[in-house]
Image 1 (tube, rainbow over the protein chains, first blue to last red):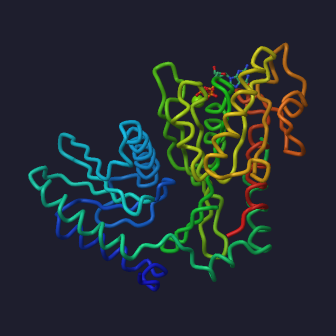
Image 2: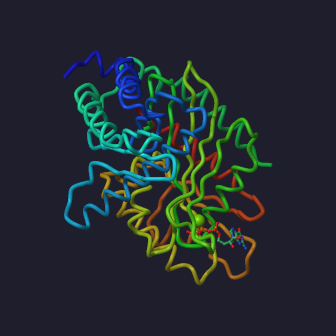
Image 3: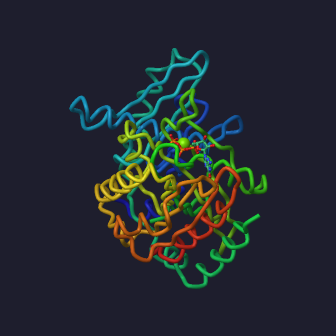
Length: 158
Length: 193
Ligand SMILES: Nc1nc2c(ncn2[C@@H]2O[C@H](COP(=O)(O)OP(=O)(O)OP(=O)(O)O)[C@@H](O)[C@H]2O)c(=O)[nH]1
Ligand SMILES: [Mg+2]
């Protein structure tokens, strides 16, 4: 595994951008299973990506339970077909989802192929590790004090 | 552990409102959403039945502000309280950083509160979390009604020592902001990367 790549998120964006280029998809998102956007590429102007991420994660976790009930570990791909837009979601590393939004349904074969390829690339560089030096900066007493002040200010009783 | 995105410089904590059916979880969330300045909150998503019972979850993102170059956010969720939706509830709890247990103060809801809390303990256990060391606050909601449980009832029955306890009338907003204030303070004070 390439440790640098895991710590520097650049390559993830690169993989998603070239996935967009090769598949002709509109938008690509990488979403954590907790429902956070990790990386996005392509056109996101028409999309509330935060809401999208929360919903996709919910969908995927529900699907995983359904898989378990029928005796599968998980379903690795989810495909949603609409009138003019379609969504291809694939599971990465058992803990992330790669979401591709595309318009030309004729291209489903290409989308599938490119998504698998990008998924393999992501699998090889993404590691669920933190960047320790930055992580330490965040749980400092000073950080906490600032955060507590913000909380007290924002949640004043009305 | 909160979720950190080094690329977009975001740090997000997942707050989950848990409790028995009809205890007022969605009412809490909707009130907070309305009370915040528009710039602090994203759209609210509610996945509910035609009768407005939560089916999967309610959600909205809340911006606390920037610290040290990071955008600090709370991701606010409710679970569906109805017993029937146990599987969904467990899914939403995955990765939670803090929990507000919204109890229904009505005396005839005692058993539902106790059972719901036991389920919470079990759900957290499934994720390897010891609830005794977890940021958790207890809200006694519906204090406006007659025949309500005295404070201390649930703590006694459930062996909850020393967790923050708040009273609320969520439909009127009373105690709602104070509850999230105390709950998010608990989360911040206890988290470690
Ligand atoms: N009297 C009174 N009613 C309340 C209070 N808070 C909520 N309610 C009412 O209780 C009912 C249920 O509230 P919800 O917020 O939908 O409850 P919930 O916990 O989200 O319910 P589920 O989604 O089914 O788990 C609604 O009719 C609310 O108006 C309160 O403080 N006092
Ligand atoms: Mg609800």
